[in-house]
Length: 365
Image 1 (cartoon, rainbow, N blue to C red):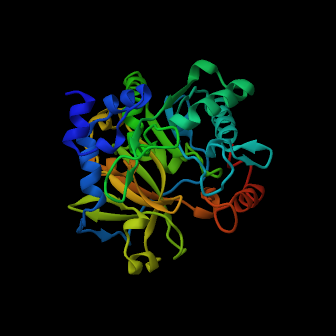
Image 2 (tube, helix red, strand yellow):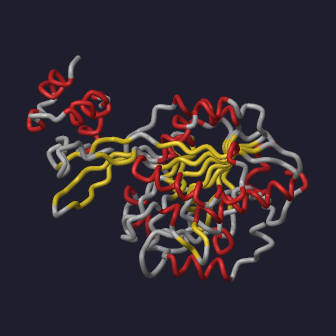
Image 3 (cartoon, rainbow, N blue to C red):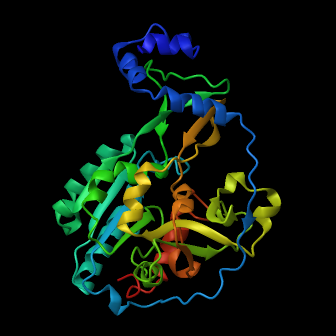
């Protein structure tokens, strides 16, 4: 069906007349997903879940473990953030913490891990389409920070259209569709061809770029994969009532994460719970099969130039219920969690720098 038939079918004729660029964009839209966006934006979905308070008895390892020697690993980095809350106009991966960017910190940490454990980790970096060129130029300018170029794969995630308060497509000043990244939930689909070549690896680790304290190869998080779990998820104690983090819960006997924007005020105040920090390890089989998972859309209502805009995203944690034998591993938030989300105050560049200065450099490899 032609784009003209589609915009008439979905009552989007306000987009006409369309430029060649806009016509191309309209021809690329998955109109079934567009309809799902419209329905989800105004849906009142009630979920039945219970927040997890007790993780049971879990043994954790805070020091390098012998079982990592000579193991084969893949690392996927979610680096789609645009750092809009910081207002700096650069991708979050390129934010400078001390003398190094967030991306450089992670790559150098992986490099040191390779030398320590006699292995070679292939790194996959998922960037938004807007950030792709800047991140690539950053890597080239600094010669990939000494890391083997053939061991780093940079991919751009897909985009979804932004909708106005009436569920209609929107145009920017250039007359093109307003688009936004489709969320970190598309990670496995984006890297599906790469993951297919990783089926002989022992672990695949997944991290978010915004946390400079993260240890992508925390032994306590990786070890359960060797013990038969297909998914091992890091968790930190939920100690800050104002913190914008998703919380772990059980829903229909599955481990799920309830995004902070979907929590009730009383649930946000419940500090006897466990928070998700978007760090987990999984088997290559789980990662490869995840490309075919049917994920729900999450809608965020934002203000742009005084108008309500609905942004749709897929979230990485919605893959968790598909695991057959998942586990949650608590790690020390003071050692491993200091994200950069705000320009000032808590979870800012300043707090991340302070956390790095007080960290143990040996622990960070």
